[in-house]
Length: 118
Image (cartoon, rainbow, N blue to C red; front, side):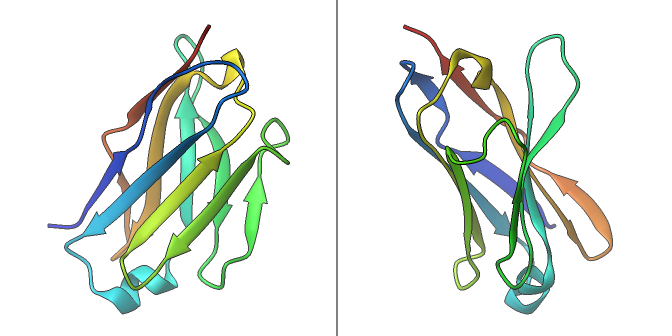
């Protein structure tokens, strides 16, 4: 069974940093390597939004709201995707989800809560 599992969320003060991780399991490395991977977030009462994307060859795209503060990366040998979040703001509070299309299936993790508050 192919799964995505996020970790690394928590409570942080404004201006702080967090690093989210997403582990893909049940997939062979070559399939993971070929997949673009995404981080989405959904704040309470709001629609889910795309935060960042990393393509198979490491090109990246970011939402305007996080440009210059967030950085997405991947370690294909470990089948991991990361989201480094710096200078966090209260508006960044949300459940963050890892997403990718593996084996022609649109897969989602269970989400990890990020709360930015003083």
